[in-house]
Length: 408
Image (tube, rainbow, N blue to C red; front, side):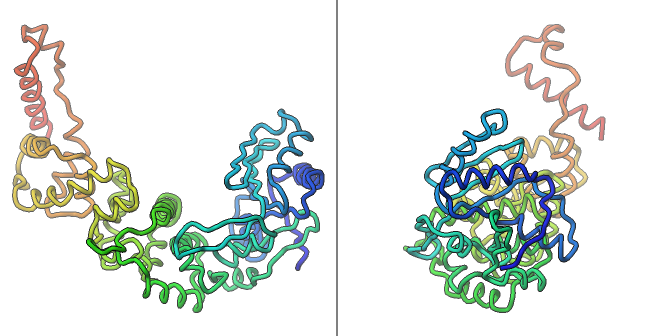
């Protein structure tokens, strides 16, 4: 172990002392900061990487996290401890102490009964809790009693080498979502797999037990895995440098976890940049290149709205290719054609992101024409003698089309 002389910006010494005293009162043997804070503090201290400081802390307790939280309540009272939410099934407690977010977790050990299933969890030691993590750079801890850095898996070495290294040979088989997580860290930190980690990833992908082919008895991946895959993809696409992350997954062959077609997608970056520009969620835009987009989206449990977009997209694509108005048709012709077809604006946005030959009028409809309403409202026409009914609606639509063409 190393003594870690390190500053945790934003974390007061009083707060850490309250945690230590509460742990002692609850009979806890050890108390440690774990997770990204330790990694990022080391990167900042030793490699001068940019770091905005600590925003929250993950704390592992050898003993009972709920008992430590109760001791904190008694010591600090409700004015200082403003949130205390226990998740008994996970042996965790979410706290806000002196305005600072803390997550207390009972140290755990876990085993996987079968690949990609949820693990079986039981109480454990700090060391066993660190072993269950994804990469060596995330398996370090700062002991709050001794002030020592606990690093039993060469995390510091791999930080210096900017490598992502799994903790054991079955890491990917146990939880394939670690590949998506690796891409997140790789994109954010500029890291890549070590040679052994890449070999483990590719050998596991080569013998993956679920083919997910229609009619295959093994067609359905475990629901827990599908949920975790979507959550990790959302985190990558929404919060990380997604282009670099997807490029890493592509290079590792890991996009086949989602659908084999995603490994053969030369237009991916351009399409997703357009989707981002249009405000479309990136995951459905990514899945348009899948061999089976709708089936894959259902397996990943995308929202009903996004499923509708993907369901409509092939038909809209065929319409745009062979039935859409000519490029020089008026705004009213394009608007009537698109709105008569009943296409969702999200579906049109997905098609625009694929850049068909007639993407420009599609973009104008999506961005401007569909929002245009007649300058006269229904009450104006009724004041002029129109009566409510279909004819009134048709006249409002006619006026809208006229004004669209006048404003082109």
